[in-house]
Every structure is written in C-alpha cells, then in structure tokens.
Image (cartoon, rainbow, N blue to C red; front, top):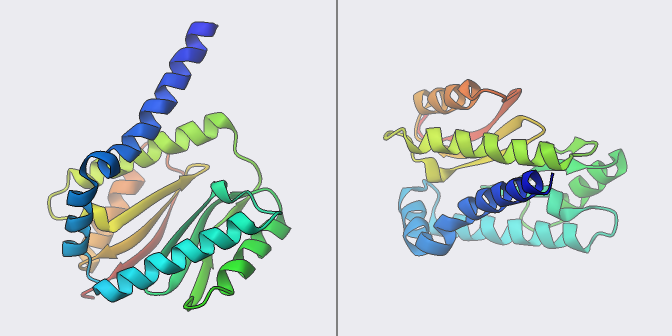
Length: 192
C-alpha cells in the first residue's frame, strides 16, 4: 500500500513539475515567443496580466472562497474564471469580486459548484497535459497562445487563434482526448 501511495505522490510531483518546467527552464524564451506570437498589443497584454493579478488577489483576500481552486484568465479585459467552488454563494461572490476590479469589461464565470477529489484533480491534470501536448504537436497552431484548464473533465480553452479554421482544429483536438466530457470555447479569433 505504501508503495502505491509513493508512486501516486511521485506522479503528482512529476505532473506538477512538468507544468512548471517551461517556466523554470525556458521562461524567458517562452515569454518572448508568446509576446512575439500573441495578437494583442504589449499594452493590452500588460493590462490583462494586471487585471488577472488583481482578481486573484481579491479572491485570496476573500474568506469564503478557496482561491487556489479558481483559475483566472483575462483576454482584452474579459475575465474568465474556471475551477470548482463549494457553494452557490462562493460562485456568486467570486463573480462579484472579479467584476469590481478596475479595467474588467466583462466576467465569464465558468466555475463549477461542488467538490473535487484528489483523484479528480489528478485526472484533470492528465487531461490538460494531453490536450496541451496535442496542441503543441500541431505546427500551424500557436499553442502558447491557448490556455487549457480542465475541471471535472470539462476543458476550457482560452486565448487567441488566427482564424476560424484554427479554432475548429483546436476544438477538435481537445474533443478527441479520451476522458474529456465537454469542451468550452473561450477563444478569440483574430482574423475572422
């Protein structure tokens, strides 16, 4: 039993570190690629990053929300929240807090109400990694411009794609991953 527990813990550490490795090892190169390929202006990217940070801080400061379970993405002033909160009140409170942050044009609240077990969290991490790996293997897709969040087998894709064909391809890739129950399209097409 102890051997299985150690193996599971090892897998979690590897998965978690795998998500951080590009940031730790090639953060500068990755950041430069993203800035060079993102269709937003540098000022807009800066504003979006500041909004994201302010929303996350507001969630951390809230006593009634477990902020570590909420992912926040901002694209052109539109905040998208994904993750799991325990109550309807937490769902509404997170949306309210995000909407109060200066510069937020709109809040898309995709939070799920309920709980998420350790096993579900691990399964979600694996699904997200599989989707991201498939996107990376597609040469015509700028995969660093697409954020993949998975919560209870629901994959949310946020970011920018160049055209409708790329959007369709990205969605098809995410849907093709075994275990994904639903895909939410939160991508912006730059050249419709």
